Image (cartoon, rainbow, N blue to C red; front, side, top):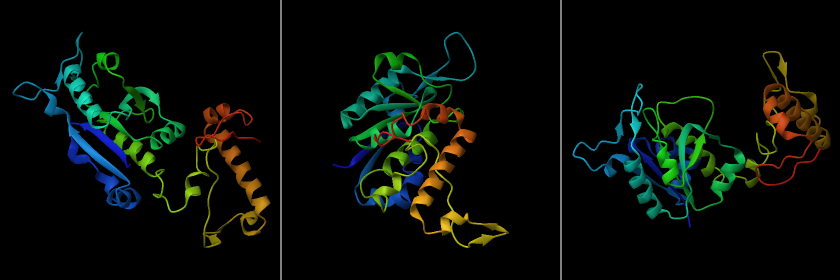
Length: 243
């Protein structure tokens, strides 16, 4: 059974977009995953196909209506009953590589893309929807964020990446940022590949990479470093990390 992505959006023409090329595109053509881009306006009941209204209490912008969203979500659940439903919103919990791995291991995902000022809060009380953020930024809509989440999932599906281990030694998989990479030429604009990487000593190379991952995480992402906590954190793939 392939991974099924259902996206509820006001702009279905944005999909598959970049997911139709490169690794994701080839996997889509091979049937490894499939996509349903569903127009939210199809679930409005008035002649103008209205999906939003002014915010209660006043304020700028418009808010997506809960009744329309509920009908769209119910429809999506009929298409993929076992798929979790995510709503892309800056008010959501930041998504992690561990959560991406959980999603990729399942039957698929339904993603609701917000627009305007976002969602009527009652949709989260009335339907089982996971609020998800891709970072401390605000986008014009949830579609670019949905593409990010789907790309992160699709690349982990069996056979999508050329080598299964390609997704193991990456940023966040061990609770750390990934170590830096180099390639030929050996010297470029006076900058030389670190000697240890040219030594052929795999033990020393592994130790150097581990140290650089730790140093870079501590300097660039102290929040990750604090959570890493002396090897007590589990990796995104589930293995316990030890020093």
